Image 1 (cartoon, rainbow, N blue to C red):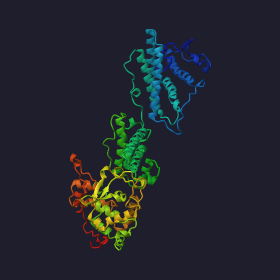
Image 2 (image 1 turned 45 degrees about the horizontal axis):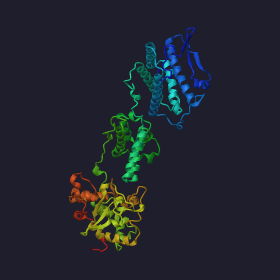
Image 3 (image 1 turned 90 degrees about the vertical axis):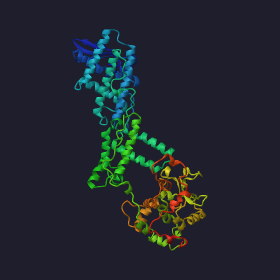
Length: 590
């Protein structure tokens, strides 16, 4: 037997017959006599059949080999130190497979060493040993054979000992354990047969025990590796913490559905379809609704309570996270192909991309700037002075006439207002890391949504008429800091518009106009995009002023498409029919 230190056994090795009954007899290694307490192990096998005696001897050999090995490590009690696993920590199939692979390699190494030092001497001896290995294989393959189960029980206990568990432990996957142990013993026996036949053409017989096969990896470990790559990319490319936290949240839900202990090799197309099915039934805002309630329980409650489900767009984000993680598995050779490739949500989005966020109508725009706040501003000189913080007055105007994103406008610096040699006033929308001045303090840090967001936006004539240049000049003289709106402090993700958007969402917008579904403060930017459509703005202008890419040509990166002196002609044409802001001009009537 290849996994037994006494693998040179012939028909009577460790067997003695007395009055027709076979006994197990074995000498104790000299170095272990004191630890074991005797020099010879001998007891009856209670059988008169040589075939049955050979089977029972195999089990005894395994038991005493383990006892001798344990004594060699720790002393007479055979209590080798084990690594105690965390309490209530189930043993995953991936971990079990690795334990069994380690056992096979360890036993095979010992058997090779023994065979090299004491090979069979005669052809008859070799033939007898080959017969015995064939009997052992037949025993192992007979699934109801009690001797095979005894054998597997002994080996199973040895395999689990390093992690402080036993075969009957509820945290051990029992069904997988016995099948894997059987495969391990068959593998060891076949390797023994090959050695006896002087056949060295194969290093293994069962693919599970291929020495070149990478260790079994579970999904949790793979997800951690993917997140590490994402975190590294975030740091090197100075991406936002908000973006990183979103990736972590996406992966967290997928890990919860798939299971951290699930072997990566077990995640096939059917497993991906199960993930898709659960996402389709998961309620929106699950954590807010149900806290830490497990996914399956949240799905049950949401179904009973009729809660809205995740949108197809959100489902696709989570499916994308699964696909990206399994793509890493494919690149590492853990799976032959990515089973999530091409996977889409079960339900298609009912809302077209163009309708996900609606622009304000021209009438809503007119009504908004007639609301009591702006009416009160019109009574002051200059009108913008009525707003002590500045942002409530200017943010809607900047987003409507310049197409700026709220955070871009909220974090603008005084020095970002610049002028070309030809006299064109523009705002330089740039992240701090890209700023030529550099060395900005953390409180003055600026970020952009994407690298394509950097642009130079010519001031719209209407902003100049409303007094934007005067406002900036006043702020410079006040010397309150580098920012235009000093009262807007960033949230934990660095978004300076967070508080302002909350106020507009909860109070300023709904009290000024009747909002329609899918309208928000961002609708100002969408309305500006409609204004560009009305003037038939060319793709270069859409990219230069709004940072919207219309497809990529090699020639797109040549020249200066963002030149404010050129783009100002298009900005001047942007208009909103019916909107009259003359009441807000510092110099009325101009």
